[in-house]
Image 1: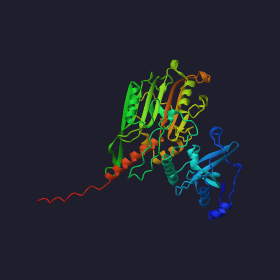
Image 2 (image 1 turned 120 degrees about the vertical axis):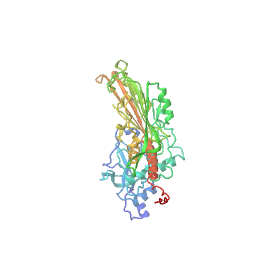
Image 3 (image 1 turned 135 degrees about the vertical axis):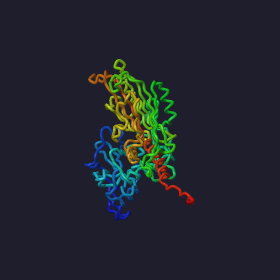
Image 4 (image 1 turned 30 degrees about the vertical axis):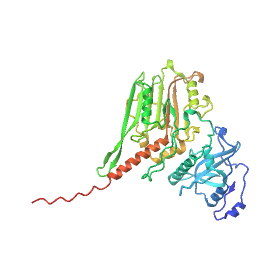
Length: 450
C-alpha cells in the first residue's frame, strides 16, 4: 500500500517512503455475510506506478464511484474507486479511507492510502459495487467514458470468466449497441451491451416483428397494439408538432379475460403480457416486459414450485429457500447476476400486473426521464432488472403448503431505455433545429398598377 504524500514530493523520495500495510484498519467497513461467498482474498498487485502517480497528484477532492472488498473475515479491507468531479478523470487504483457526505449528494472521501489494486481488475471480476453512490455532472460522464473505453478494449481480447455461473436464460448474447452518430455529440455516448433476458419466450432486445410473432403464438384471445408519435415544440406556433415519420409502436399487450371484472382479486384466472418498446420509429426493440398469470384457487400452484423455477432460470440464489418475498435480480452486461433492489428502481415495472389490459397503455418510459437518469440506473442497476411478485391464497399455511394464485415477472433494461431516449432526443433535436430556421426570403412582388 502506498501512503498518501504531499503533492510536491518527487517520485524518488516517494519511493523511499513506501508504507506497506498488512493489518486491517479498525474503522474499515466489512462485507456483509451475503457477500462473503463471493469475496476474493486478493487481486493482482500490478498498480505500482499508477499508485505513485495517483498519490502525487490527488488531494481529497475526489468522489467515490464504487468500492470492492478484499480479504477473509474478519480481516476484510474495503477499497474505494474514485473520480475527479471537476475533470471527470477516473483514478486507476483503489484507496483506503473514510467516506463523507457532500452537499451535492455525491460521496466524498478522506484518503489515508493508495493501494496497488486496480479498480479495472475489480470491475472485470464483477466485485466492484457501485450501488448507493450518486454521480452527477462531469463525474458521471467521466465514468461513462471510462466504461465505454473499457468495453472497446475488452472486445479485442477474450473477457475473463464471470465470478459465478450464469444461467443460460440470462447469458448475454446480443450485439453491442451502436455509438452515437455524427451530429449528436451533444448527447452522452450510448452504453455498450444489453442482457437479453427471457420472460416466457419474450426477450429484452427483440425486434418489433420478433416480439409480435412470439406474442401471437401465445394464442391469447385479446391482442392490442398502441402507437405514439414523437413531437417537438414549435417556437413559432407555440404548440407541439409531430416529428415527420416519428410514429412508433409503444406497447403490445395480449391477454385472456379474467374470470372476474376486478383483476386485482386473488382468484382472477388468466394470463397477460405487456411489452414496451424503445421510441425508435421503424427500429423498435423490446425494452420492458410484464408477464402476469392468475389461477383460480382450485388450480393454484405451490409457492415452492414457483420459487424453484425462478432460481433455475434467473440464478442469483443458491436455493429457493433463499428467495425473499419479492426478489429482484440485477443482470450486468458481463452476465454476472446480483440480487436485491439496491438501485431503487423496482417500482418502474414491478408489482402484480393487471390481467385485463383493455384500457390505455403506459406512457413510454424512455420519454419520461433524462439521459442522465438512465445513465444513473445503468451504473446502479446493470444491463437489466428482473422482478417477481406473487399473491398467496393461504398466507398462514406452512411454506410447503402455500398456494400461489397470481404471480408477475417483469424485466426492464435501462440500457435500452437510454438508447431509446437518445435516439428520440436526436430526432426531436434535428427537427426542432430545422423548424427554428428563418423562412427563406421571397422575391419582391411588383407594385400594383394604381
